[in-house]
Amino acid sequence: MTTVLHIIFWIIQAALAFYLLLPTFFLLVYGIKRLLGLQASPYAKAAAQPPAKEYSFAAIITAHKSLQLVPPLVDSLLRQTYRHFKVYVVADACEQVDVQFNHPNVIVLQPPAPLNAKIKSIDYAINNFVEAHDALIIFDTDNLVRPDYLAVLNTYFNLGYRAVQTNMLPKNTGSLMSKLDAAGNLYYNFVDRRMRMELGMSAHIWGLGIAIETALYRSVVYNNFLGGFDKKVQADIVTRVPVLAYAEEAVVYDEKIESGEALEKQRTRWLHAYFKYFRYAWDVLWKGLRTFNFNLIFFGLQLMRPPLLLQLGGAFICLAISLFTGGALAWVAIIALFIITFFAIVRVMSNGTEIVKALLYLPVFMYYQARALLRIKKAGKSYLKTENTQVVYIEDILKRTGH
Image 1 (spheres, rainbow, N blue to C red):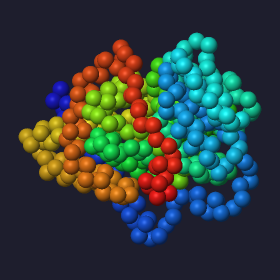
Image 2 (spheres, rainbow, N blue to C red):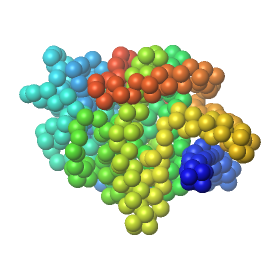
Image 3 (cartoon, helix red, strand yellow):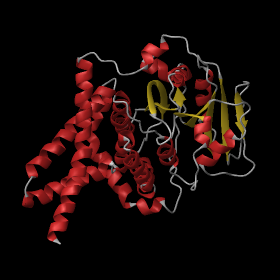
């Protein structure tokens, strides 16, 4: 029995060490490639050539109960330099559909009965397309996009990619929590998207700003319509395409959490989704092992990766046990190296120093995540929706960022 426990402990240690040291490996690769002047993104060279095809895009906006934030997003889409698209606003369970868009490219859809599910809203939009679109893009109401967003996506689809995740940046960073929330996004953009793309592997998707061939999206079959949208989509799509691409040049802005209470609610939902849909990770890993596909094996292992709070918590537990069993110095080194790497990645990915300075308050952020973990059962019994309130137009953000 003691031998079995010892083996299990070593397996857990190896898994945690792998997850915590991988970002350092990626950062080293990133530094070496930049030192050698190697350009990894295929976009710059492809954008210099006229596209072989102009893809027809359907921008789907899933609104639930409120259309307050929809006008700024529609405005940013209508400012696109690329013109071959339609915007579909699904006003689900909205009592007052009082927005008017006097533009032929904007279609407002109001389901006759409440759908109360993002997946159903997307399907409703697809079933009401006014033309045959080559690809669809999924947005939340609080998003905004830069004027070249669709033009960049058209370039990536012309390169042969069938599913492309775009680059999510913070729309607001005025509060401490929004800065810390943005820091987490920057970290995961680097680890799960930029470096995956540079190494020719599939990138993780967000639940927004993902562009997918319409026929490919239709091939995804849902058995559960309440949550887990992004996890189900990426688990299915990554097994159907050679590479799930990441377009860093296509920027979509997303509203960040403003308060600790909102953070706790959001992370409670995310933690619940991680455990509830863990089986998708096994499905991807198993298919990768059966087909000897390294991309799928790696993707599956990363889907299994515990949330950062649990990784660090597990690392400190291993450190405590190692004080008695040996190897404590190794865990001190791993934890210290991860913290240094986290700060370095956020610095590399951020344009200024405000977000980096906010990292000094990470213990506060972790406190609310720990509270979220204790409330995880509540997420299975109630709909923990993140409330967004920042009514900002793309013109304001472009002036602020200098783009």
